[in-house]
Length: 304
Image (cartoon, rainbow, N blue to C red; front, side, top):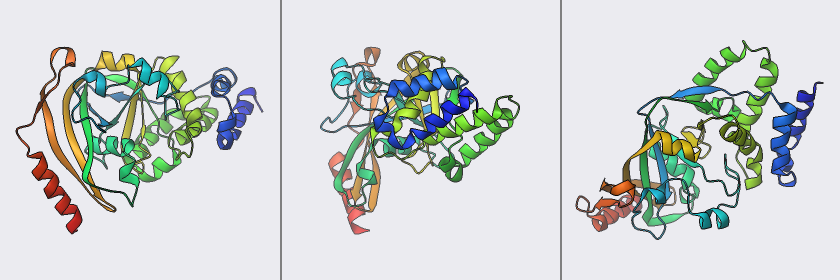
């Protein structure tokens, strides 16, 4: 067994006890012992739309791009961004969003499913609706990004992933390192599609993301959405790539009205302009009678 094979076997053995393993030890094992780290890539086309969701909570309207893009407030980063995410380390702001997929055409739905806890609770009731803001961002130039397509669960449930997998597998077969690369890609992809019980369960996918985004010069990673049952498609950018390659195009508010298993997404207000440096959003409140729409939505989900 080679050093790389031993290291990969050790990494796999960590999967069920990640809370005991230091993050830096995982990253070092991948970088220094496995060493050959495969990357499967795809094109993100110019003009592609990326939707991002933020729950409003007690805020009726967000007023600036800074409030709905990646986190820049150092106090929030230090005190609230304290856990591992699918791709981020604690205290590391990244930009998560959603792309269209063949099974979920409205990428805002994927973004909402990834953001809301309420929608996944079968017993939850919120008749007035969970208020959230959708922002749409446009890609300004074609980018080569990493894609995660070797996940067993995603391959079973997402034809887009299957199509990408078939293309990547053909290319992989031409590599002299194909067996080792395949084992790694399967491991990292399965970690990306893992249903987690603790934020520590993200450590392997985070270590892989950390290497790609911060040491290998990758701008973004796209991967299947776990919260949508692998039907939707997510993407994560490092902040510098957002500033360089994405432009904010639309901001709008929506509510999901929920009565246990019955739910309805309603469209509310949208911006007419963003102001100087996208720092002074102007919301059009004339098109929608919000009170009436809430009443109508409640009626729909309580009469079903």
